[in-house]
Amino acid sequence: MPIPVIDIFAGPGGLGEGFSNVFDENNERVFDIKLSIEKDKHAHKTLELRSFFRQFPLGEAPDEYYEFVKNYNPAKDKEQREALFAKFPTEAQIIKNEAWQCTLGDDNFPPEKVDERISTALNGERNWVLIGGPPCQAYSLVGRSRNRGISEEDHRVFLYREYLRIIAVHHPAIFVMENVKGLLSAKLDGNRIFDWIKSDLKNPSRVFPGKNSPKYRIYSFVKEPYKSKGGDPIYTKDEDYLIKTERFGVPQNRHRVILLGVRDDIVLDNFQPLKETPKRKLKDVIGELPKLRSGIGREICGENAKGKNKYKAIPDSWKNWEKAVTGYSKKVSKELDVAYSVKNVQLQTGSNFTKTDLIEVENPLKDWYHDSRLGGVLNHETRTHLKEDLARYLFSSLYLKKNSDFPKLRDYPDWLLPNHKNAKGGKFADRFRTQRPEQPATTVTSHISKDGHYFIHYDPEQCRSLTVREAARIQTFPDNYLFCGTRTQQYHQVGNAVPPYLAKQLAEIVKDIFQYL
Image 1 (spheres, rainbow, N blue to C red):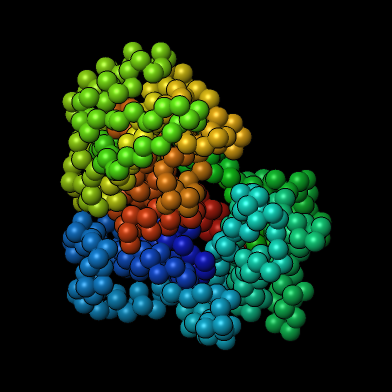
Image 2 (cartoon, rainbow, N blue to C red):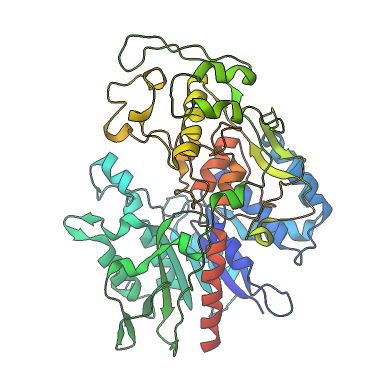
């Protein structure tokens, strides 16, 4: 029988997707997601749809699924979803039981209600896996900077205890807990948060006495223990628990703390951590997607940083853009004619489903991403950008092409600078970041839902920020994974997710541990 999995704080399902992609020699799934808990309604809709996809054997999802994702319209989500599920009532009931929109720690979802749902999903199974990442904004370095530290009043600091409580009550054989890198340095009242989280996870009864909870050993996924003391693995430093995803086949420099908890009745004779793989280049995973150009939004005519000149108007016609910027930078002006001599760029903003063939490039993860039944690309639609931002994007991508790095604001001509007195220095120095094609991408975060300035496409011919699908490719979601909601909501989901390709590798380790049961 498949190993049961409970996924809490699930987001759009990145961890669950990785676990669901581990198959045995008979092509059967090793793990079965019994319950996914997520509070965001749009991510919950994404979880529901992916659960539907998993109800069918590998490669045998019905045509109706593909028709749904190709024709998806956020404004018609409810009626489209009801029509799909009505054709598959058995699967629809399973989905209803599995994907639960629930806010853990909220008065509307008391522990008794949560425990009943988990117990029903497990149906008496003792050996199962808990996965999930408690909300991490309070631990993040950016969040702490904005909020001037961590406050005990911030409920996000203690939401990990909802995770801990479920361990204490339901005793999983294995748990996998993900969080941000900032957790390693976070403090509350002078105490290191990571130290007491590890202590709690090793012995949940410290926080929840009377639950008969077993103890757990905490392992790193990427390091062998320095030594073992009383069966507990010992590591030399906290950074040993940090996973740098670019070292494990993910085309992104995403660094996350991920803990592996093993119930103390399971004795591991030979624990093997993740094996490193070659780095993936960004261009190899998004270079095959259809080329798009951005729509042009309104124009802001404000003063530049020196307050002397107005922004110069940028022509509506893409063909005339070179005339708007040629001469403002000697470093890139010679590249403009080359950039605009290409004729095969689609002069469109894309759509939820772009019906077109992929561009042939050498993609080492093509078997992971591709689905020939799609016949196109999902969630591949550009934003509409301000004319001034489009000019900056063009400058930045051309500068990168010429200099192998994106420009800081001090490198921009004055007329392209944002209307801010500190535009050339301080925290605004890298306000516009063009992604390097020959390297893994920088970390995709939920901020990508607000603007695309940190995620500019490296291709000057396209001159825009990344689409949802490109961000999803960077996060290693398969191409047939539809993100529900509006484009902004889709970006938010992708930015908050765990890369499924990494999660699959974690799941392979968990699968191997189950042989000791």
